[in-house]
Length: 212
Image (cartoon, rainbow, N blue to C red; front, side, top):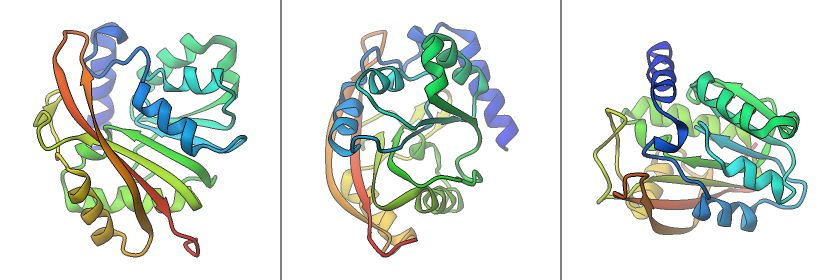
């Protein structure tokens, strides 16, 4: 399954220019705002499903350190590495499946724009949240952005699970009881390169103290 998904996303990034992909953002305003608010100075950041996102460019330019980019697609990460040039030496690149990846670092901030909504099976959702629990330090913050209930039903030819902030918070509480607390959420539109509008919701959770 992982190999099939890696092939799918490598093909997507090889077929078109980065700026033509439906999820492209030149300036990821919503994500960057949350990084500014919740990443402490010197804190570690992981962007899961980073693809070729330019969040890392902006985060590094604003002084973030200890940035990890994780994605199934090595082609996507190669685009980012080339774009960053010398700044890439300040980034850790990980090609892995978030469901099975074993983190060796406890992060202050976990950012996910549009990975979790691809996990439509209960066992995959549970694996993701187990990885998140391992990767986030107690008191750390997780940003999980998914399509809103009015967003698309598919992305890149794959089905997605859409959420409202309340339904995502309920799922997290059910699958990982007592581990995370929702602290805020908001909805935000994404304008694709072709001018279409996709509705997202951004939910923010804090890992509770006392959780390993």
